[in-house]
Image (cartoon, rainbow, N blue to C red; front, side, top):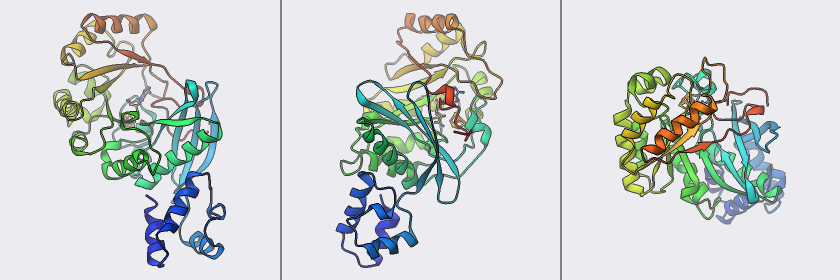
Amino acid sequence: MTDQIASILKSWGEPSYRLKQVDDARRSGARDWDDVTTLPKDLRARLAEVAPLWTVTPDAMAESRDGTIKWRLRTGDGLAIESVLIKHARGRRTLCVSSQAGCALGCRFCATGAMGPGRDLTAREIADQAFLAADVAREADARLSNVVFMGMGEPLQNTAAVFDAIREMHSPDGLGISARSIAVSTAGWVPGIEEMVAFEVPVRLALSLHAADDDTRTALMPINNRWPIANVLAACRRYADRTGRRVFIEYLLLDGVNDSVADANRLASQLRDGRFHVNLIEYNATTGQYRGSSPERATRFAEALQESGLHPSFRRSRGADIAAACGQLANTPA
Ligand code: SAH
Ligand code: SF4
């Protein structure tokens, strides 16, 4: 994964164990070349001139009341991206990584969408977010146990880099995170879902559905014009069949928009084949025009799904006080 560094070392005729020394140092907390004390000093100095040890550097950090940490990170070309580390019981941590600096898909409820398109991140820029977070977790005697691609950007528009980064996170020589503890969330980029069907690491797939009919979904998510609900669900079924894992359906509850009992019944009628699990999501305030559903309406919606044989879970909002919750990532001051 230290691909740029690997090719530099190779071109300089350095023995292959040098790369392992670099990787080991990165894993044990080295922040810059001076910390890689296993390398000869002159080699360190030469490397420092041509390549950074990390492709992303923490620039600002904020900690929420619930223990969630949000970083603003800078890429080598000065772009700002965000990663969020969520604290769980028993020393577990989930990292929410960014796959692009911005997002071109323009979902109406999402602050990243309001930023507009940015560039795709490289595999190293994605994996480095996880390596840095693993380090921070270790310092707190905790463990980075899960990674979710729910930060900035649409991961399935950047599959080559996302897949390489996942291989690195999953590999025992990398972070050793199990496939079922890595989740890729998509707004429904169907060609990317097809690529996932052929990808060898059976990670979890989450689809941001957010509506049960095409008119409502198109109004919320312009991507639905290209790949309507039936197409995207068909691609998800292929993924479920290939991996034997249920696909998570993310459903944001928006007051008066998609949260009626009729919506719940329509949703259930399309998801009743045992291949899906519904996650109901609390709306996090952005500059958009929406309001989250009241607890009463949310409960009624969940009950209607239950009556149809689906057993939804609720995703609690984390880090909202520092704008670190889902849909709030837009380089607000950390
Ligand atoms: N682009 C991908 C992954 C990043 S968004 C996707 O859309 O799935 C991660 C999750 O946050 C998605 O489920 C997205 O729909 C959700 N989200 C976006 N804006 C939100 C908001 N304001 N409140 C709660 N969740 C939001
Ligand atoms: Fe992009 Fe996902 Fe936000 Fe939609 S919800 S704008 S796809 S980041």
